[in-house]
Image: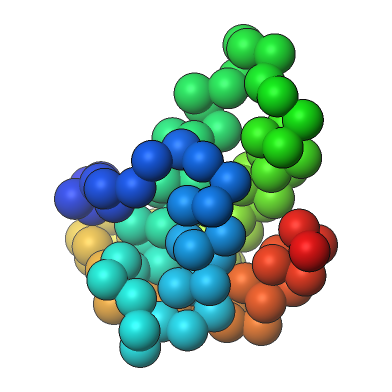
Length: 106
């Protein structure tokens, strides 16, 4: 599966909250759930070997969960052949999951 065009958002708490809100309301989002999951993964990887300030540190488990749940959702929904062939830009996870992640950060 190819990567999407990267979401042009900074790696900040405010941006993370905005991305999760867009995930919860995909009709208002400039980014697909795929792009949001990939952004969450890049954010998490940026702080993988760094002692982050507490406001960033508290985000990391949620960001990891977004990316992990995206992968699990696709793996549990599509065959191996489909996973190799499709781009998944139009695919959406449950918006309820995004609302739950937002609630965890409130």
